[in-house]
Amino acid sequence: MAIRVVIAEDHALVREGTRRVLEQCQDIEVVGEAADGEEAVRRVLELHPDVVLMDIAMPGLNGIEATRRIKSTCPGTAVIVLTAYDDDVYVFALFEAGAAGYLMKTVRGEELAASVRAVHAGESVLSPSVAAKVLARFTTPGPPTDEANSLTPREKEVLLLAARGLPNKAIAAALGLSHRTVQMHLAHIFHKLGVASRTEAVVTGLRRGWLLQDELK
Image 1 (cartoon, one colour):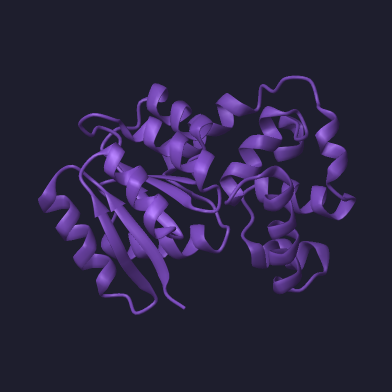
Image 2 (tube, rainbow, N blue to C red):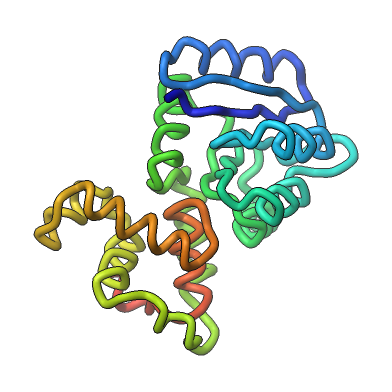
C-alpha cells in the first residue's frame, strides 16, 4: 500500500515541484495539497494521510500551530517540516508541537522521498544542523516521571539505542533481535507515548528524564 502524503506549502510552484518529485515514486501517493495552515488541518482531517510535508511560513495559521492541531486530532499522522529556516525558535517550537522530522528545502528529490519512507517506518529524519540543536535542547530534562515505568526493560533499551541514532537494523543487531521485532517494540513505544515517530519518542524520553545525556554517547 502506498504511503499517503499531504503537501502544505503556500508557494504553488514549490508545491507542484514537490508533488512531481513524489509522484515519480510508486510507493508514495500525494493525496492532497494545502496552501495555508488552516487548509492543511482540514485536509488531514478529511484524508487521514500517513505523512504531511509542512512549510513553516504560511498565511493565516502557520506551520507550527498547524502541526500542533494535526498532532492533537490525528496523532497517527507524521509531520515532516520542509522549510528554508533552521532558526532555534522554529526548530524547538515544531518539535514541541510534535513534528517527526525537519528538513531544509535544499534537500534533493531522492532524499525527500527517502525521508517520507523513513518517517513512515518510524525512523528519524533530521538535517544535521537541526539534530545538533534538538540534542542540545532536550538533553537537559526535567525530573524523571513515573510514566517511564509503562515501558518494558526491552522497550527502554530500544528507545535508548534509537536516541543514539541507530537505525532499526543496527538496533536489531545490537540486541540480538530480528528487524521485525524491533519494529514491533517501536510500535508499542509509540502507542504508549501517544506519538507517531521515533523522533517524537526520543524527544519525549529526553524531555521526561528517561534518557540521560551520558547514556547517549
